[in-house]
Length: 263
Image (tube, rainbow, N blue to C red; front, top):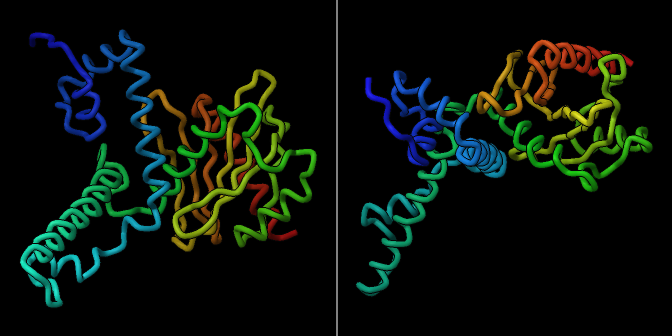
């Protein structure tokens, strides 16, 4: 097969799951050979995750009936012909924006179709990690030095009993935490750092879905989330560690969170 040149269009095709499978290896090699394009791909992935997190509360809402009626020429009320055309155009645009945004956020790369809770949880956690783990001065709202207040504050705001897991045995010290939006609710984010400055985060929110666990990565070279849904908790540990180490950290954090329920 003749090797072809790739472009930014191919980045979008790869993220949309539309890049032919036989071209994937050559595409990955092209990314590795072009740091600028690789960085652009990572930025697109982060933007997608941030969009999904920001609009999680409205993506599943139905398009208002009055807008659907307007698109199909059924807008109520007595208006002039010019005003009717304006209403029709505006309504059509609204339907397209709402539907298009939902399709874009939920459909890219085939991830999160159907609004699965674990995919949404993992994408929100990764988006928060990408944004705040890189911050040096404003990564957290409450520092680890005020741990008792941090735990009480986040527990009250999220609506869950929350303890900040002690991950010293895994090589990580608590930096602090912050409160974040999560769909129609709230989430707690706890940030940890090791001696080399590598950071991981724990994202916790109230989740009524059934029991589930797994791993999720928006992109091969991006941060990965180890997540679980259990006992009303939706939790994800996010980082760029080797998968085995990240899984071990997540197991420790999960055990301590559940132990906190019984204390």
